[in-house]
Image (tube, rainbow, N blue to C red):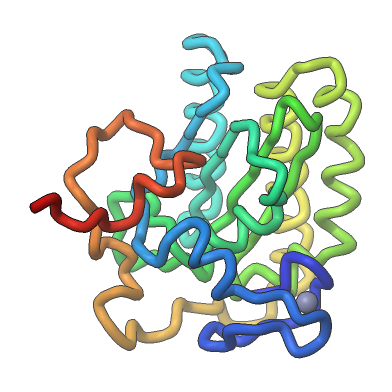
Length: 222
Ligand SMILES: [Zn+2]
């Protein structure tokens, strides 16, 4: 993963970014250490209407058909002041149990698009395996291309455009690397790598974020 603050590499187990002092532990303390179920589209802000949501789902489905080793989720919500979109993206890549029928796919190949409609900001966070292709430079260029749509409040259109741009970047990289063997997910080292553990019995449609405290274990009342 890249540090959400300074973009330097941060090892999975590493708690603090040695370059800038960013603390993954601090985010975990804020959002919790549990996995959360991440729907393909989480619209906490209620900015996407049913038609837009369905259309976006189709767009994401089609993306995953073209890139079966990847999966993509979209998050739309107004974040508290203390949390940035890259912070949340970083946390979701590490703690999001993506809705997917192929459990062999790991978060290394995950892509999360995040939009804060109030701040009119967007971020894209990708898993380890995609970082060499979807670099900071590539992602910044993609975000620049969707900025106008975001300012116009066209969130669904902005996400669709971002998906299209990501698609093009991956395709271009695929053509460049045609001669190289396909990169496969690393072996699963423990069950939590499957991203399906520690989920609590929450309703499927209930957004777990940004109501962060609810994702943590509450002490039993005596
Ligand atoms: Zn850093």
